[in-house]
Amino acid sequence: MKAKTQSMGTMSWRDMPPGGKVVIGAVVVWSLAWKGASLWRAARNGSKPWFVTLLLSNTLGALDAIYLFAVDRPHRSEHRVEEAILAATGEPEQLAHSDET
Image 1 (cartoon, helix red, strand yellow):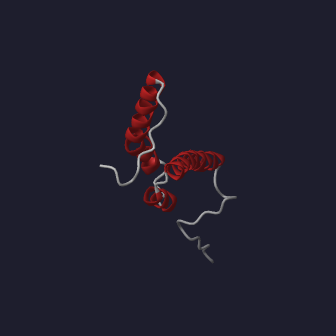
Image 2 (cartoon, one colour; image 1 turned 45 degrees about the vertical axis):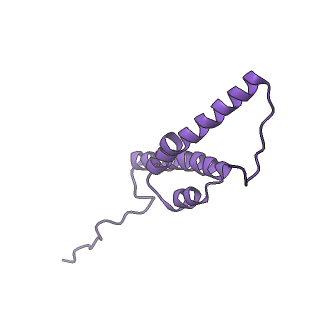
Image 3 (cartoon, one colour; image 1 turned 60 degrees about the vertical axis):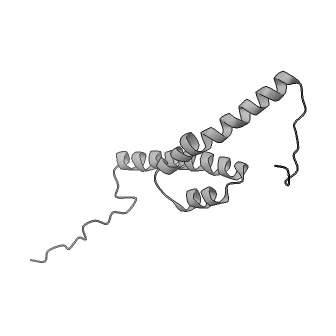
């Protein structure tokens, strides 16, 4: 009697149950949404080291969320405070020279 040999651990997409496909699809959408938002924000802020780190990492959105909510948040709040002060005083934005102290 000849026994079938089946390799354990490998499963094709066709052999996967429908629930597994839904879970994988949800994880991909979740990860892409976080990655897109964090890469867009890092590029907009001109933060090349963060952009490269976020582009090359795959942490299912964890590092992307850390960047969006912890690293970038102080930068955004400082910018909002400055805009509010300029709007309240009616003064134009001061474009300082790089050699000023």
